[in-house]
Image 1 (cartoon, helix red, strand yellow):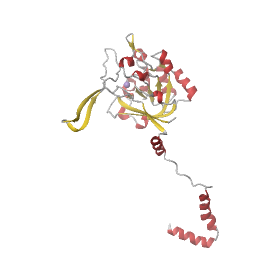
Image 2: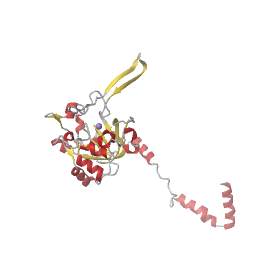
Image 3: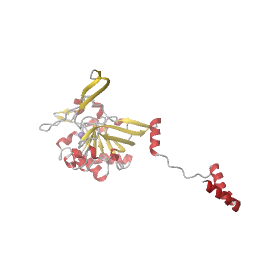
Image 4: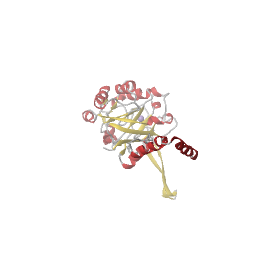
Amino acid sequence: MVATLSQEVVMSRMAGDRVFSVLILPLLVAACGTVHAPATPPDPLAAVADAIASGAVEVIDLTLTLNAKTPVIQLPPPFANSPGYEAHLISRFDEKGPAWYWNSFSMGEHVGTHFDAPCHWVSGKDGPCVDAIEPARFIGPVAVVDVTADVRTKADFVCTKETLLNWEKQNGRIPARAWVLLRTGWSARAADAATYLNVVDGRPRYPGFGKESAEFLTQERDVLGVGTEAIGTDASSGATADPPFPNHFVMHGASKFGLASLTNLDRVQTTGALLIATPLKIERGSGSPVRVIALQPRS
Ligand code: MN
């Protein structure tokens, strides 16, 4: 640096006013604000962190609380069913642990707000389980498809290709790597398993995705997966469809994911939110309880 400056001083003596135009003039121009040096690009994650801290971006929890009453899907015989959530106290500031509180718990992989991995289904059995999914695929933009009005008149409403094309007419094309979430208002029933499973005439009735929507989202669009507010991603009618649970069959066969028993979808904007759903890293886990959060600009 010193050598360079000395060299420039020498040059200035030799070149007279050339040093003014080469060295001084640009500094003056820059100081007057008429010319800017190329700005360092802003750090996008610092901007996100600042926006979360200031509240400009809100963080919404789309997760139900796990407890002994958390509803679990009920399969008819001869199929095996999953245990629900159960907590077991280890110690709580007592003789077993005077200064600490902790529990163990037991539950099925598909209880409460949870993640379905491709290996959950026969069509995706060679696809990744929760431990092998590339973590960037847990995060993507959200498309909220609101069918609350349809569900009011038909509890077992099935999202179709037409539902999604109508959504796109209003909101534009479903982006690549999107999480497509079906807003139904169904999570208002989650505190009561009977209302949530909604068995009428011996058959559960709740809304969700179907074969047509899954084929559209995997073949004509490129989504990460779909999410619902009900007990599974398939509408209840999927239990008697061919193949059974066709949304599972098609989505997982295409290595896509599912999120079930979401809540607070009424607080997520139709487009523009970012969803983060990170399942536990269970070796060969077919699914996992998951804390799902959405980030969106505060309106
Ligand atoms: Mn599941």
